[in-house]
Length: 200
Image (cartoon, rainbow, N blue to C red):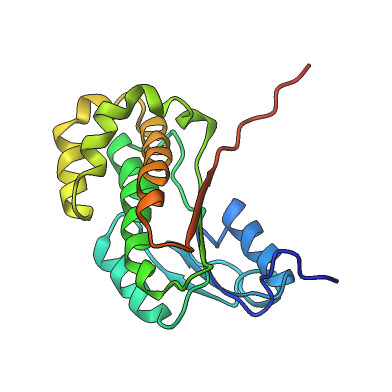
C-alpha cells in the first residue's frame, strides 16, 4: 500500500488513548505503521489492540503532564489531542482537562517536534461559535501557563459554570486559530469538530 499519509515509522503521541476516539485513533495510526505513545488517566489496551505503550497522565495536573513529557523523550512527529471530559463533569474541571491540559502538553512537546510535524485537536460542534466569544476567550489565551489559565477560569466562573464543555471547545478552536499561526514554520495544526448526525 502507498503510504499516502506518511505515518510509516513516525512517532506519534495520542491523548485519551485508553478508550473512545483516542483508542480508535491509536489503532489506526499503528495500522499505518506509526509508533504510538498513548497518554491517559486510566489503563487501556496496548500492543496489537492499541498504542505501543500507554503512560498515565492526568491532564488536570500540570506536574503529571510534565512527567509524561519527560518520559516520552525524543522526537514527536505528530500529536493527537483526543482526550476530553463530557458535559456531565463539573465545568471548571472540563476546561482544565479539555483545554488547559492539552495546551500545556502541546506547548511542552513543541520543542521535540521537527519541521513537517502536525498537531490535531478533537474539538466539537459545541465550540463552533467561538468567534462571537473571542473577546472573552482572548483573555484566557493570553494567560501564560496552566496555573495562570486556571486562575483566569476561577475568576470567570460565571462564563464557565453553565456550559464548561462548550467553553472548553470554543477555547480549543480559538487557540488553534491564534496560536497555530505563531508556531514555527512547518508545524501544522488543526481542530476537527465532530457532531451527532441528524436524522432525516
